Image (cartoon, rainbow, N blue to C red):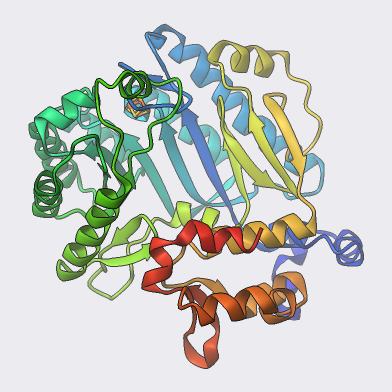
Length: 431
Ligand code: SF4
């Protein structure tokens, strides 16, 4: 441990480190010991899909240039605040994720400007994972080549379904052929990490069409698959249709069958499930090609959220930016920096106390179905063991076959395969 701190001491003063220890600020120490992940939100879409309740807007493309300027100003401002407040000159960054929305609506030149500013303001690792979410209907071979040239090394396509009727029902703006083309072009451009997002549990979806979607996706040989069960969110067109009886409510039992079918099929195809909704293949040297950016969330490690509606977790705060594009741009233009990790775009900045941090660490860590929560990391971070903190909860959940100790010397607490189906009930026991 002492060696670890020494490694980081050049960036931080011994006095401030001691103050954080004395105050029991494990999150501050954690920030100091970690590289950051950077999330950049791109809230533009061609059309709002029928099920979507994300922070995204259609018909606002004329705001893209001003939005890109604001995004760059926020990223640069946060880096500047970190340097001024002693959190570190050029914060180390290990992953960058362009999420949305539809980030692939940004011209390659805009992405180049954003990445240029980030590389100037932060110490981006040479091996950093840089992901961009893309709608398969919005890319061309030339665009994907340009992205690869910018150092974007992972692409995530929102495929959702291989069934044209389902895609129309969801009001997606692409068809299955677009997905085939987009993946082929991404390979040609040199992408070695491709994710496909799929969605199941649609109204009246037959198991057979879901099985077809899985086969279609596997035939494209992605390195990573994210599978999400549809939830009908209030305020969406799908919610209104379901309320009026125009479409059926999703059937949770059938969705559970689809999840199990996917688990078995992906297992046979050589994928490893590493999180409740995420599967990955391995590289030739055996490395699991999981999404490093999302692992930051599940390990409850620090990340900065830049852009309208983006969320961050750094310096002991959870931050959430204002949602609207115009209000985001106006706040960044008005400036008013208050010090790291805060930004003028924050609608809320909630201090996270140690107790909350412990609960959140359990809740997100147990989503990692292989890795689970490491007993050693938990003790190192909070100064007490898992069994000291949660003796009754752990004993009961292990007794019911929902949790298990795994790894050498029982070093990891994780969900059993039965526990994965009842994940939410397990997580509730820890909060
Ligand atoms: S493409 Fe994604 S973010 Fe955009 S409207 Fe559809 S579901 Fe929402």
